[in-house]
Image (cartoon, rainbow, N blue to C red; front, side):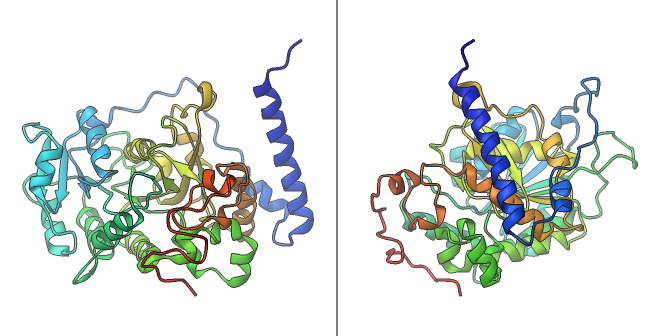
Length: 397
């Protein structure tokens, strides 16, 4: 009998995973047997007889998208419109929006909105037909090679702040406040017994908590605490995102916070997402897949009240396609109010490090602007060697 190479690779991966847990549990005092029970808890039983979810177009009146003309936001808008979902695009530049989208599309409303003004955001949601849920796509990080690092950092900084302060910290909680008293969204119309669907879905970023970790934790989890965006933290942007997340959690509405890894348009799309918690994920995910996940979260009650990270395993030869539903994977994650234990976070880190791109799998050795492939070939990135990167960055303490 011939054993396929893919089968051998899968068995090797399982053996490696088993070995990692045995080593981790025997050498790391933070990890206990109860931690593994929590990490691999049995999800609720699901059968093929369960009815499919209703179409998103039947579950929303209109979705407000903040940052609709951004690289991820415009993909979100396109995916919503393709499902016949009405969209309220909240943008700074209406001319730009009309050049990107079809202004004659009856499902699309483009509204000039100052995301740094609480009053303007609330007015956008509550007047002229408004919206009953929202997507925050106003900022994000990218490692796509088709942009210069100056372009990326300038875009992040310029879009994340204004003269009044961070638009994330103002506009995002304003969305939540505007929707807090609106009717609960559920998969079953009119039922108060159903688990609520999120009213606000936030696109955040992996790494937002890492600058605040203790020195011991940064050292122990160097593979995620030592990556360039965390090590250098341009303009303190990670702290801005962390503050924004907290503002959303405290605004009184149902929410979901998704923290993707490095957005890379050249990474294979339509790949299998791997979700985790504890802010220990490092890796890549295609922007198209991120947009699909954000839209799917609007009809996934298992995502409500949770914060989680996501990278993807490249879908090579059809072996790792996306799952039919996000529900099973997200059902295993814990609610924010319950928190992720340190033991589970460190166990998750041990697994996620094995999913890094490249052969060296040494994310902490990367310089800003250097790819995993360049690291494997010992090539210097476009900004120079690690520690000497030429960019307007502020190192974290």
